[in-house]
Amino acid sequence: MKRFWKEAAVVEEAAGLTVTLDGRPMRLPGGVSLRFANRALAEAIAVEWGQAGAPGEPFSFDMVPMTRLAGTAQERVAVDPAASVEALVSYGGSDLLCYRADGPEELTTRQERLWQPLLDWAEQRYGARLHVTTGIIHVSQPEASLMALRAALAALDPAALAALGIVVPALGSLVIGLALAEGRLDPAEALEIALLDDIYQEEKWGTDAEAAKRRAHLAADVETAIRFLRLSAGVAEQEGETAQ
Image (cartoon, rainbow, N blue to C red; front, side, top):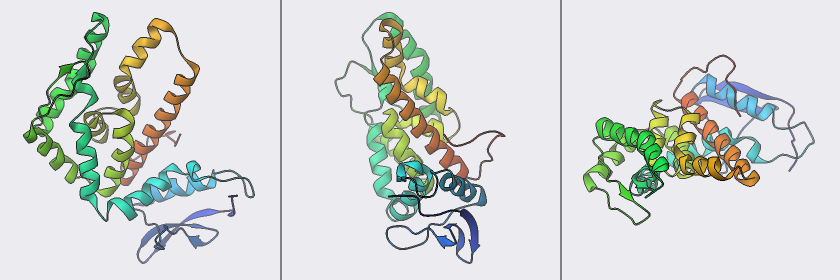
């Protein structure tokens, strides 16, 4: 597929804000127009399309990740939010932060320092106390804690659930995802915490080029998802803050 449009613009219609490509509104696969919660998000989407190559050059929807998130939120999550909630709750039942190494001490100390405060926060914030174990053998979590996490997710809007649908599987942690959504962590902090084991191994054995490439892609996905979440919520961007 090649880029077929010259200009992307924000247009306010009776049904709300949309983005047009050469005057034609964007439409989802179901045929309805893609709508945006506020002008800041709509303008960011228009910029995304404006920067997606030059007219006539190859185009991929990978070039417009926030648009994909907006479409997912409107056409899938909003229709059945409970399905998204249940998918995310499953990560709470096997959260990365609950599975600690049995050594060496330097690594376990680092896990305790970076991971435990987030579990404590989840308990204080949501009433969700999660059990911790050593190794990879599954540990069952209290049903009351999973219900508390389910309630926290059910209170979120479709845009936030769509963003967490990217972030939580990528990081392997519902707790980290919720901390990102609530602004307790920024994306760089979240990545450092979620990739703690990998970072430790690289410190000992050196950096692998392919691993570094995967991490860069992961960082871009997380940063884009959180930017989408914040724009959808009407959080103003700092000067100079742009999409990755």
